[in-house]
Length: 80
Image 1 (spheres, helix red, strand yellow):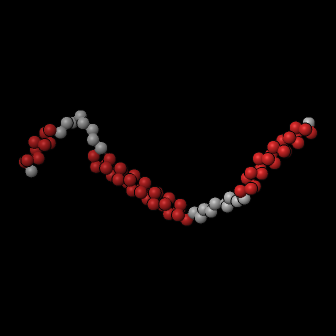
Image 2 (cartoon, helix red, strand yellow):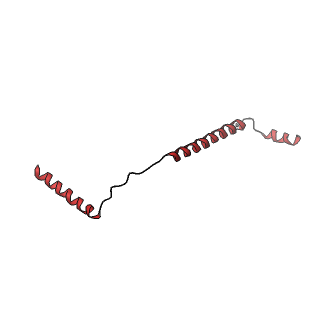
Image 3 (cartoon, one colour):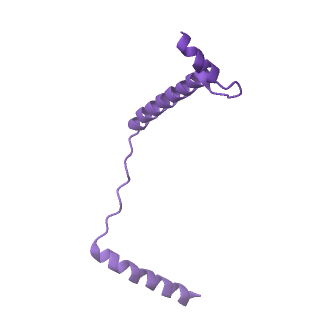
């Protein structure tokens, strides 16, 4: 016990440290974040996500589409 007395004399009275209470608060916050992440992971796993199928085009339809758009634009400007 006497070997701890020199260590106690070296402690600065003006120094502020978080101490045990700071550690407990930090540990509780860490456990809360861990629990929230675990819950979020479970909830995200329950989501069923299905993408809508894309409209499949034939190679010829892709080439014809710009021509039809150009014809429609030409008709629209001719009607004005």
